Amino acid sequence: MFMFAGPLLATLSRFLIGGLVVGGIQAIVGRILIALGVSFVTYTGVSIAFDSAKSYVYQQLSGLPAEMLALAGLAGLGKAIGIIFAAFAARLALNGVNKAGNLIQARLTKG
Image 1: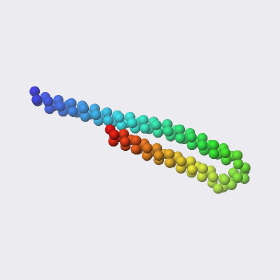
Image 2: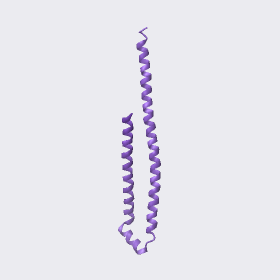
Image 3: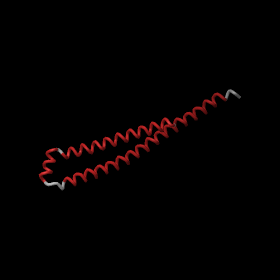
Image 4: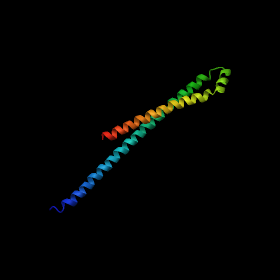
């Protein structure tokens, strides 16, 4: 009677451990896919907002007299505006990465 207990327990433990590992991997992959989806939607929204803000700034600048626009062009105002918007985008990206990393770490350590 006890001869069958060893192989039976070994088989049951393989199924249980295998199921737990596969379930854990599926949960992690699911969370990663959700995070990627949220990131894509956020990136798209921020991109649209930046494009709108940039076009608004350029539209307001186009109302300036020609001499002022020429001076602004010589001074590199267009490049400066691009640098400012790039800095805002970089800051938002770093904030998002830090928050996502903290969220993933908290979820993984929480169990």
